[in-house]
Amino acid sequence: MAGSSDDTPEDRTLRVMARWRQTGRVLVEALPYILKYDQKTIVVKYGGNAMTGTGTDDFAQDIVLMKQTGIDPVVVHGGGPQIGAMLKRLNINSTFIDGLRVTDEAAVEIVEMVLTGSINKQIVTGINAAGGRAVGLSGKDGNLVIARKVAMTRTNPETGQKEAVDLGFVGEPDTVNPEVLHSIMKSETIPVIAPIGVGRKGETFNINADTVAGAVSCALKAERLILLTDVEGVLDQDKKLIPRLSVREARALIADGTISGGMIPKIQTAIDAVEGGVNAAVILDGRIPHVLLLELFTEHGAGTLITRE
Image 1 (cartoon, rainbow, N blue to C red):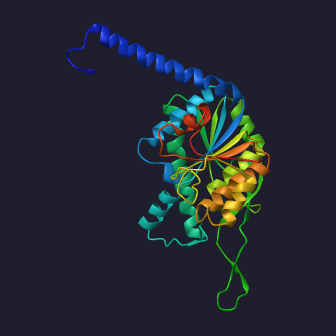
Image 2 (cartoon, rainbow, N blue to C red):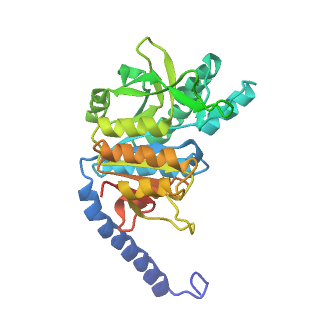
Image 3 (tube, helix red, strand yellow):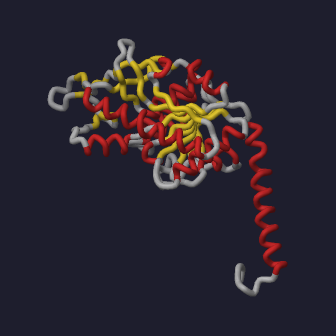
């Protein structure tokens, strides 16, 4: 039995050499992908639901390794569960309409505090502790993300008429200033972005993190947009993972109901990014240890890849 007291020195040496050979095979497999992504920008959206347990340490290590292999990673993070918990602690009511949090003046202050003052700094600290050099910012810094108020309408079930819905200080990117990020990345530093935008009159807007990540990836002409969440990817009607979809196939799955609920906005973000010039987008389960490395540096990948064709 391996590891028993009956092992000879020769047995232990053979086991060590086998592990070394396995490590060598992994590195050889990764090499062509390291070359493929050298000097390329990859935008990673780190979802609030993926920020659990030791996964934060794995995530930080993956980001640092990406940087060390020549990739320029840009992190955009969410924080929905953490925001919800803080609003509950402060007895501030929180409601959602079509997946967007209604954000009044009191709530937007809490949202900004949690995203920029707590979560952002935790991620920055984790990356720095793993040996990287990260800096935290929000869309307000350097006018990185100029936002406009989300205009939403819904059909009144009683009258059948379209009615405007006021979501408060909920915004969407109007323009993204990539030069802010280029300056940071030229200094070999990893940007970590909280999804808070600034209006043209100085207003603070809460923006969906997927949407910010998509807009940033287009502005940077990124090689890839990676959306980390708490599901393994897009599932077919038999609940099996679909490893690859074209934009046309993704739209068809939305139309026939295979893609539904909270997955629809993620897929739409991926489609918009690909059509906006990003080479590919992928949805990954951020709960899997080192899932970024599995996706980028192995042949099989780990989630659902969305491409133009």
